[in-house]
Every structure is written in structure tokens, then in C-alpha cells.
Amino acid sequence: MIDHLELKTRRLDECLRFYTDALAPLGYSLQVDGPAKGFGDGTTLDFFIGEGEPSEAVHFAFAAPDRAMVDRIYEVGRAAGHTLDRAPALAPHIHPNYYAGYLRDPDDRLIEFVCHKPE
Image 1 (cartoon, rainbow, N blue to C red):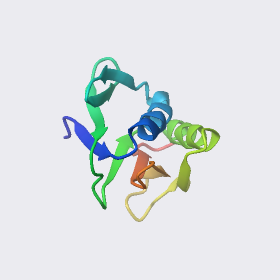
Image 2: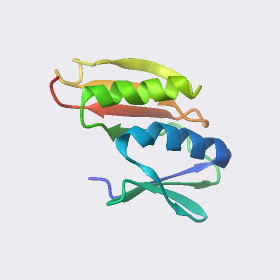
Image 3: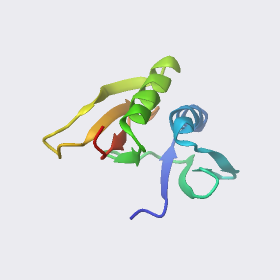
Image 4: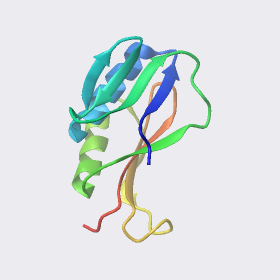
């Protein structure tokens, strides 16, 4: 289980906009506006971004409560002009209910939004 995650970026303003847009459908917003910007849903504070050198080959997934939310996040990304990677779809090679969509953040990290529940 992950307690929190912090990413470094050279594009803090762009990343703040990207994550604000992409995480809003999950109920996340900026909760801490310090050197590390912290996002949470009001009960959790588990995602931070700060200025620095981005790591290569970072991939992580945000859990979505249902497939409709995965679709919604992808559409929010499209409407906001963020970089799309893969449209939401089932990935039965992972498991029969694995439904995920992917965006790229301003540092080109692959950001996944996934639901493990059946329809």
C-alpha cells in the first residue's frame, strides 16, 4: 500500500495544472501549497509534486472507483489539451476486469487511471 508519492518536475506550473485537471474527477485538489505541492481528497494527502529533476521511467496508477470515472478522467484530459496516451479499454492480459486509460504529464511520465471492478 502506498502512503504517499512525490514527483519532481522542471515544469511545476504545467504539472500543477495537469494534476489539478486530471485528479479533480477523483475528488482530489491542492491541499498543501508549500515547496512540495500536496494533493488529497480532504481525508487523504498522498500525492506531492515539487521542483527538481524528473525521474525517468516512472509509471504509476491512480485508482478509480468505476470504469465511468476512468472514461471521465480521460475526457477531462482531452478537453484540457493534455497529452493522451491510450484511451480507456479493458486489458484482459492483466486480468479480466482491468480497465485503464492513460495520459502523459508535462514531463512525459505515463499516468494511468485504473478500475479493477467489473462493469
